Image (cartoon, rainbow, N blue to C red; front, side, top):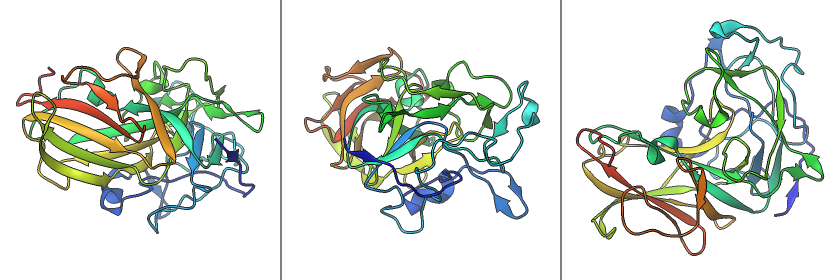
Length: 313
């Protein structure tokens, strides 16, 4: 993977809903406003941006104000003092305020990633018919933790109400989070924890949803390569998301195959199973919660059951 930083000044990476205008309004985290200004999240997790520059986006109007040339930037470097607002027992710099910081980031031409489905899709959360289902995914890079010999640095995040047991538990995009400025270095030796990996962003990630039978054969395609918006969530991590049922019929009872298709510049070689803390590299027999990667590594699928009462199979 060819990497190189852009020596362009930046105060903070602050973008939510990077692509897909149809999703942009609903997926944008709503921060507190002051002086007529809406504040957004800061990049807290080291990130690799694919495509030469993360300013080169597929959808005009969804730009990222900031570059990686001066990253990392610690909270407090902007002169904003931390405070104890929000009931936190620790003094924190909070997301969606005037405070600005930036984890290490860089740009690259391609990446090999571990694919990470959202917790609600692989855990014990019930998927209930007639309700919107959040489809979320992350692209993780465990292959290298340095850029030009420099260690990629992130900033640990905490809930404003209580410390999080681990970063990967912070899945609520709308809760308040902040950092006390504690920095951490990327750990590429683990390979199973999404809190120790770099994130990867690339344009052109899409979602296809199909109703399937018990043998995983197609019955009907409901969504065909709709764009998944990329978001900088409250934990400061870039994730891809789509609200299934917001712009189309709500999910009905049945078994579904959800397929995320990646651009040719990104290849998935593993799937992170957050329940078993393991990578899955082979296909399994048909069943619910099975996951698979296409032979070329450019699409990843999961099979899910949607039930009347939301009972997990």
